[in-house]
Image (cartoon, rainbow, N blue to C red):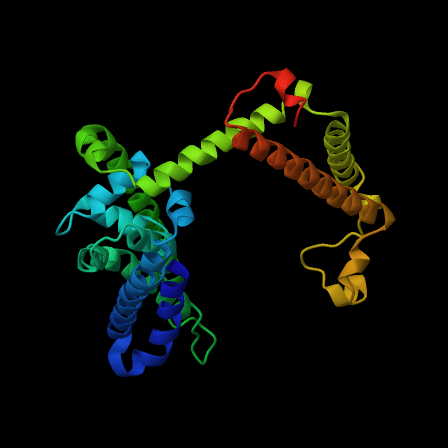
Length: 317
């Protein structure tokens, strides 16, 4: 991603400008960045994405049957290079996009082909890093060697940001347009039946959970647990927000743990601060207990074959 390209732009030209010249070193760092991007994308797609595609829960988690994913599959699965394909592969986050391509089992060659224009992002990012390094160089008399490099690096960083965020906006535009203008093609893509069945089961479970956790159907002790959980987190938030000076030792971003806290990070908390932490933990534990109870009751309701029973029937659970 961008942090890696920026680091390449700083490190490689700083060592290679004497041999390749500044322009050659910047182009070299761009080439290295492109190779790293293609190599990492291929590994993520084939070794991670395609292996994860065997798990129904993973395919369900990414929404493989959603209209957005089908539109993405339609654009990324097309041959050659298109604006939509390039925008998705450049604008999308590196790791998730590559893994998604593997989960959808798209052609590696076509994805690599569509990824090559990422050089339009890599070059200005490497240029930014190189200019930042150049702006830090000084002559023997103390004057900057490249007085214009600081301003140029700001401009290059602006171009990098424009390419990065611009490609994200273009990707969103094309996905939305594909979903609408090619709706028939999107709908024609078959659903993953295993994921569809899992979604139906989860939806049934969700409805059952909503039913058994309706306030008028919940027994007394789960109501008390949920109430105490709410009171705990409310008290914890009020203590931290309104009385921070009696909850924590003042500690600035520029302070060090050794100097300000005696080398012990736990010293940051005053007695009331520990009380706020304890209340938050109590809230979490109580909420987990209530949620576990609700899931057990919902599972009983699922096994009974009823999704929305009458309140009188709930008394049996």
